[in-house]
Amino acid sequence: MDDKKDAAKQHIVIGQKGPNRWDYLTMSSPPTAEIGDPANRLVVKVKSGDSVLFRVDGGKHGVIFEHANSEMKNKVWEVVTDSGKLSDLPDTVNNFDRKDAQTSEQKDADNKLIEIRIKGLKAGAQNGILFACNPHSTDKDPQKKKQPMLGVIVLDEGEKKK
Image (cartoon, rainbow, N blue to C red; front, side):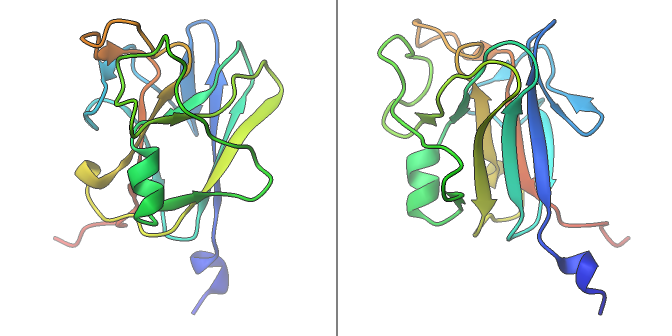
């Protein structure tokens, strides 16, 4: 067995400006998607043990994990030691589930935001780790669910057999 094939990998998601977006490999987050829905988002495919590093190359961004509290409690993922910390959403952000969502600190270009390690992610987009941008995906109005800079981390199931 090839050890390199099964080795944990670091995936890098980059916050950009002009327009504000997340970039991963050659893909960018679509202009808008719906908070709480994995459809029509930037997709990051990972395997158990992989890590996802969020960093800023342009503009000022933070990363919101829409279901951080429940996902960490259920050991879906964890924050990599000394990579950053998560906190409650600011009082001005009402279009996410404030009891479950958490955000990293907002940082300017040339900074790392946070890194997470995938532990118990289940297959299927409906089980994906939904992420967004603080401040570009946020709104005071709880009804404003269609926002820019939304992504989803999903389990890479490899090529499906026909």
